[in-house]
Image (cartoon, rainbow, N blue to C red; front, side):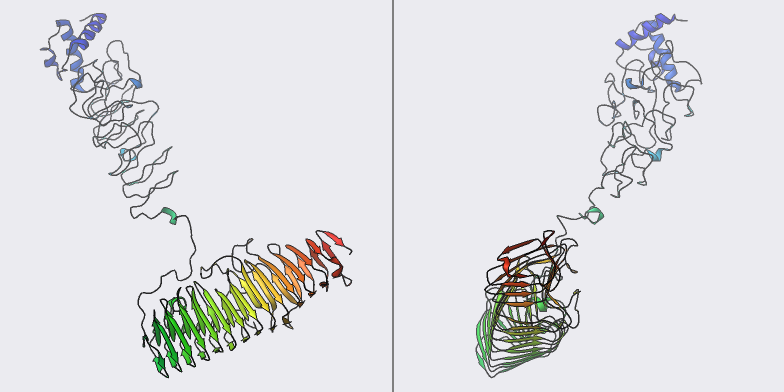
Length: 639
């Protein structure tokens, strides 16, 4: 029997001289080495050929065992003490895939085996450590496919796995059983041949069914791109949709329609030449009775009858189903005509698009359906009306009306009345000027201005009776100035200006400003307030806009003007009131928000109740406390 020291020395010689490791003991007998070295090789090869060690048996050469970081295990076809790895295998720190036919002396691990790594222990059955499916990203190095084995080396290595795959009394993790299931190992499985990542110092891979295991790291995405129990957001789905319904910069708001102008219009009569005394009729849905596109046309003494309705906002934005429509830069002149429509979304005379101009005079327009205005302007067009009589009776059917894209509207003389709910005399998403005319709304505000648009009234008589609230309105008023946030009206500062004439509110306040910044100018107007309200101006939040940032902000300029009624300002709103040219204001200012008053010499403010403002400017001798308390910036004003 060989002396132990001699045997160790001979084994070292064998390790330095051998280049091919025989798999069986009979191969060792033919190797070119001294007889004693061959004997040592024969002993080790014999152990490897058996692939097992009786339980409790010590490793050869003094029972020395290798630490896990040395990364070697036996292979039945590998010589001892070569520190070799099989082809298609790799040390844990190299991040490569194993190869099964690699030459020895490369510091490799055995075929389909993985070097141990500190502190790792697979969880239970192999399906909790299975390599990811195709298309997954590798998270670790040195994983294995199901069914691969792990081995141990006999030379300064932990003992081999017994033949039945059960662990012995070993101080190192055993090999993987033949069925690929993990034992009580301190090592993750090897890297599989397909290069999928594994378990080394990384969270375990997702099992074949995509369910996460007991992991300290988020699992990889399963093959179906469904997220597991991850601490990071899932990958982008194949269809490019963002998870969770996320989206771009945004939430970007549009109008309720969100569509574009139609490319085709249906028309009973497409007119490209002047006519006199003609009759035009349409009874089809979504069809114009008269369509003028890009031409310059004059219709004199025409009779236009439109029946048949439409749905959707293309009728309100682009003129589909209007009795008369001019578009595409047309110039249409209508004089001495009679236009009627009876259908929903059947506007009377419609001017659409930048460069389009409609001139209407001495014409009667009557609409009876809902959403059917009398004079309609959108898309940046221009409409001029003189001596026109308009009567609408449907809901949401203003006599003078504009919608998305606005434009410029000039009206003089004539009569313009609306009787439907939510049908003011003027609804402006444009710049509208009316002079020397009579306007009335018997079931709505007299005037509505949406967004950064304007209404200018010169020497008109206008009356509103907002007896029935419409839509989101919570306050009855005669002039509503607001921003709906629908996308139909441009944002920005709006304005209402009235010079001369008269304005009567039969219900509610005279003005209500909300979710917008506006300027109100009154000069020499005869104002008559409603019997059911003592409020001249309400600047308060309403149902539009973002709570806390949807107040009304009004600059009110009175010039040679008499006003009676209170001014109400809530905590998110502001009012700046200025009086000039002998203006007289009689009322109380109740301001939770910001309020200021400026008086020019000769103008007066007579209090009708306790009031509070943030600042007073100008000739304060015009203030008459009238027995009430005025607080300025928290201090009582004594005159």
